[in-house]
Length: 146
Image (tube, rainbow, N blue to C red; front, top):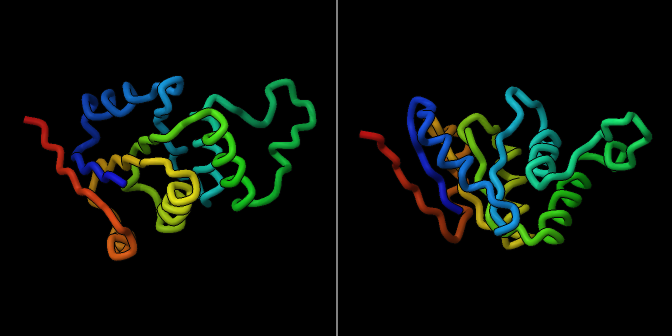
């Protein structure tokens, strides 16, 4: 897992993160829904970044929207990721994610072998810092624009 720490939501920084979105080469960029509550929203954002969507736009019954709770939706995201060959994921504005969402990302990475780059446009939340002890590897890159 790579954590990139920037500052002030620099537009160039975000453009680089979005330029990394190349699904056909196994790399997607996830832009989490602002102010989303639980980890289910992040699973939906991941699914959307994979090019899959729910509910269906035509309003028909959609089994994806009815498919279980948070854990099942993360399993579905993992299944799509593996099926589509996505092995690298960049998550923007990770500094806004609460601890349960970080846990889900770590579990997703462990189960799928996906390498994550978490882009923090502000300080890493204090509640997340203890996770460093749980990881076998963690790089912290400080990105400064001059």
